[in-house]
View 1 (cartoon, rainbow, N blue to C red):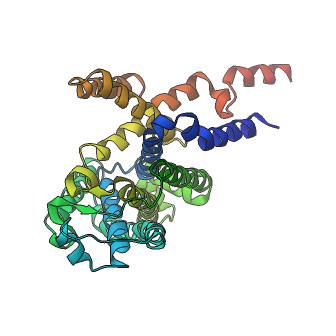
View 2 (view 1 turned 180 degrees about the vertical axis):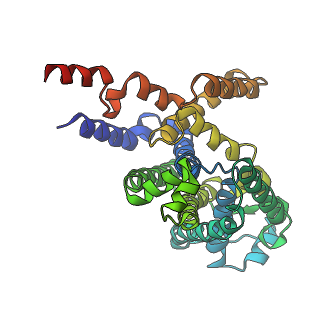
View 3 (view 1 turned 30 degrees about the vertical axis):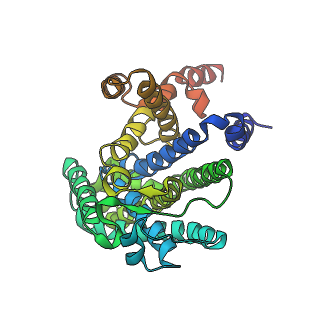
Length: 346
């Protein structure tokens, strides 16, 4: 059995037993998977394709609202439900809850993919910092639009039914939903980056004009990449909506200052344009954030700023990029010295 098989087997086993080995940290473990998902999807466009978006939080928030609207709309009138806001009890059966969870999250992903294509037709005419600012503007506008839309609850947000079962079992369910989505995304990304599609978006990142000269329809690839990323972010947003139960547009759904920026930091910390970088970065960032939030209260944002500066100055390739230079054999890359010794021996 190869080391790679053992490595992946150990990761899968740990993923399965983690919520039972660390029962007090189930919610935090689920959050780590959420960070992995949003970091990997950001890296699809930012790391692999070279388009650094600051608006991916748009799809997270949209996913939350789509999942909620679908779930509520299958049973009640959405407008009446949101306008009542606690003044009337709305009950959901177990079947209605789980049907809404599955269909709502899938619908969230699909709607976000379509939304990404629509936004992409407008914003992909921009490049560099203009694209980043443009997508940030879309995210801010989306949050303001929803917060003033009374049909979906406006600024007071919207509430979903509570998990119909044991509270701890509910934590397990949401953990495995996030983990399952993260694993599917990782495996899909691993395959995608090894195909001609992956080579095409890498060519766009390296030199878009040359890619177009080679016959690559860059706009189609850019739209497809963003649509794929938006699908997974939307699904994650849908799961988060059920996990949070009640969420507000600016504080939870379209939180550009928090999750919208954190996903970028995760990628920079782990390694931009690498498969494992977003995963490693998300884990390290979340652990760092929780430790500083608990022990450096009042200074946590300063500590976060120091982390970003140190990463950008001393680890420009991220932790994974640094490890690839120091320990290339861990990633299946032979050292130059080894190649030289082989040539001399031959």
